[in-house]
Length: 325
Image (cartoon, rainbow, N blue to C red; front, side, top):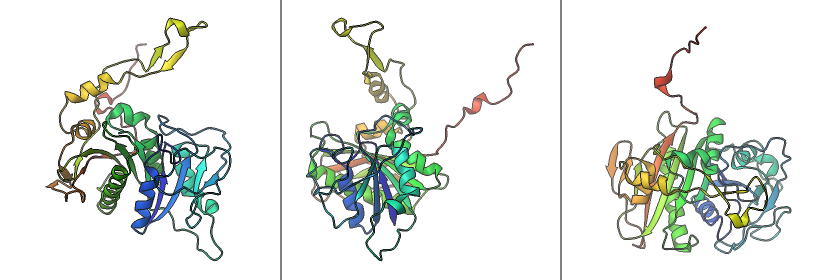
């Protein structure tokens, strides 16, 4: 299978984008042909945006050995370091949605092919992620560059999956054992979804939470939680920072209301499942237990949210509008 991988966290780095290299390795280990097109820098919270009028400048990037990428590569030139036995990744000054368009429609021009090597087959599946942090609830889903990339692929007629990892709070995000197990579990789940794609589904959003425990790996089907309290996403700087009028504003959302509201909801939304560590696997209406984690330490808990690539109208608001004369 030819898989296109994009993300919104950019090229591998220990702090900002710790997961994508491991996922690509696991996909290749399963025999898939993988094309990687990533933003050349962090593009989180950008949704399905495109840069209008921007000239896209692709650069080639050869990743270091797995778990050796401490810092992202330079933005403006191709890297000649890394593993030259693999196809280079492509970094672009664009968004996740832009990476999808480039990967789907221009990958043949970007692939460095040896003499006699055939042109790659069309892309069968687009994976957007893995994101550092869960993309649950409607609030985060509407803003997510990870989901935005998957939406772009769906609108291009491709099956797509948005993948997000929520690392345990007591561990650093760059834990090699956790990342490897998370990637393996994700590839198994992605393979299942691709071969058991539900009718009417245009993309899936997977959120995985990983904790140190002994119970079985589990997955649950959930839907985005919708009820949130209103609040400002920007905070005014204090008096010491006010050096001119009007005052400067810092983007500093207060997420306590969102997390508090999910604590009060049912167990059938994606955020409650991921944060609560549910131990269920639900697929096609059946309840199953997954095999135990090989090392007996890491438990992968995932919510799978089937989505449509549209902004569905409110059904109760249908009808004509009659204005007074």
